[in-house]
Image (cartoon, rainbow, N blue to C red; front, side, top):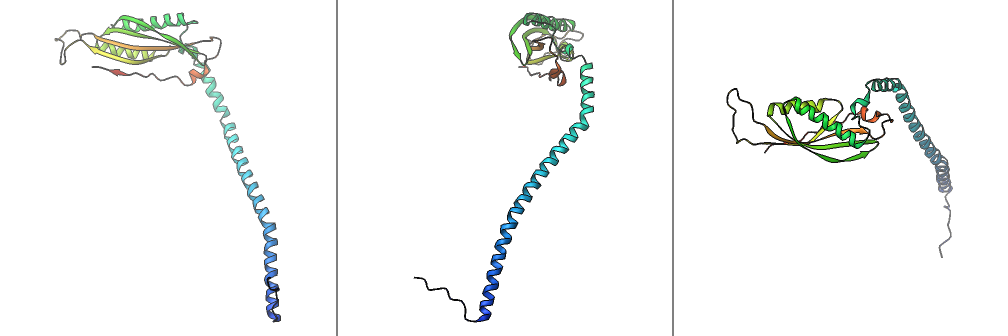
Length: 217
């Protein structure tokens, strides 16, 4: 058995023990009151910070509302429908694409050899119409053809460009002679609206960039 707790016989030691117990009790009471207050204070500080950030974000959005409205009006004034193929069906859009490419090639001294259609895809209300073109054109006119296709409306996208030469390495045309034709193959695609009555705002807001890849053996 544990021996009974004995208080010091010295009155000063008893007084010191009593003061120590009083300090411990006061610290316990203070902690019991202060800790919840501190935790509650932190909770409200976090809530105030979160609401402040939300208010600042909303204020910034409201400040830009007029600017965004002006940008939207400017976008509508650009007539974004002219950036798309006008064909209302896949067949009509493919025929329009072939006419546009053929006119650009022939207008710059090239000759279309063959055209092979690529299956049409539909995505997010837009119809992707594409075809593979093979043509003969010399080096100077090839640059003109590519520039004409990439810079006109409706927007066209060129990919998988292949250029082959039928002349031996180091060949130079005679003075005053015409450069020999190159064999050129590339894919051309354009966008048509699957639902012509829907506004094409998304595509016009961020016109896709033309990606051209080439290799010449």
